[in-house]
Image (tube, rainbow, N blue to C red; front, side, top):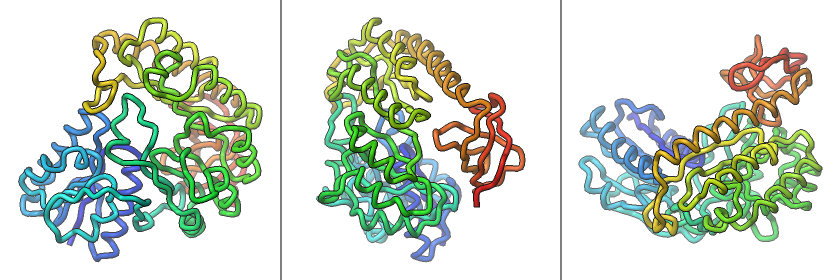
Length: 408
């Protein structure tokens, strides 16, 4: 019997799908993540934008073209948002919401719409990992309710995995790099163990630790000292900014000002001078003025971002921001072009700082990443190789480097 687990959306969805694939393998299925002929389909959906929901609905039709007789199980954010709509589609036997994906495996033979709200962290099988990089799910849900975001309504309130369960999986996974991931890992808490204390519990894991997306408030003096003490956490901070304008941040229900965000960046550089600070910026939020937009443009260089993910505002029904009048599409397109140019300049400026220096790089099938998140290419690099390399020149989306020595 063959099963297909098809995934749309965020890294968290990908990690959860990898866990479901492991669970199906343990039940005797041959499993693939490529959309192809199968005897059973699991569709892990996304609802972060209207386009993501549309693609989720279309995926059911694509599955049925491969095998009209195979049952389809739909789970995730889009099914949490409107499970009945999916259940009415021909071929869909079971719909499971976003907050209890772990129940999908035990409900394989059931039929209907299951969307119970989970009160605790929902455990899933440990995903099948490569020896290079492992994504470790430590938290789910969100309490922040940013005015543009539908996710807290679909994923539910923040829930954290037990620190001991995380430590056990991290110790046993065998990967050379572990990425701690979740919807809002800054809110992680297991009793007295917050995110910083968790890093200290993982300091003896024989792997470098990389953090998923962080909120500005978590990176305080105590947390940065805990990172240093742990010793195996790489200096890469993905701090979600969303706007460089304090007025827009207030309208987004982001709980910091421009100045507070920049102070956080300064504090990070004091402890980790070579740190890569990457970020997200939403362009064209309702009521964003040209002055507000210029504040987002200027903060890119001021914060010294190593990489910026820019995307236009997309209104989501059910959120506070959806009640506001959207900006014209032409305005958003023009601002996207300008901010993309500025983001590229900042990324190049960051990389140029390290030409001629040596860094530690973990290579994958096509290039690799340094500790501070620079994309690196080198001759004779092999997948899974950890090596010290010397950056020689700009190349593709990063640098070309010469391998100095392999680290065993």
